[in-house]
Length: 105
Picture 1 (cartoon, rainbow, N blue to C red):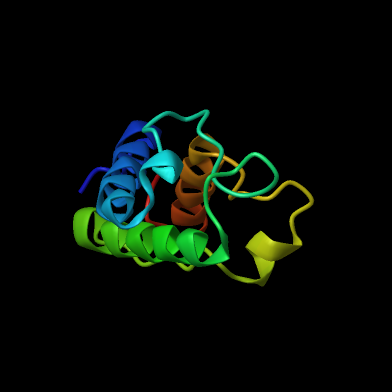
Picture 2: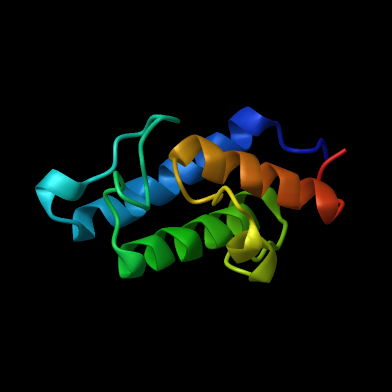
């Protein structure tokens, strides 16, 4: 099986957004754009919303890419620049995690 591309990983994140958006108030729903702020001062998600998105992304990676990743771990939390700032930083973090776990080339 070919390793997932960064674009494929981004599509998994977008599907996770589609999954959690119905549970968010209309004004806090996430746009499917790499620049969309997720968490932090400009972010649309509170901590529970972020957890829901992370779980949806982890499940999507498993279902669609056949790989298992843990996104909310000590490594993620200890980074000076959070991987959960924007849709793009989240997708890039997932892609790096897949590489570290041998799920991509």
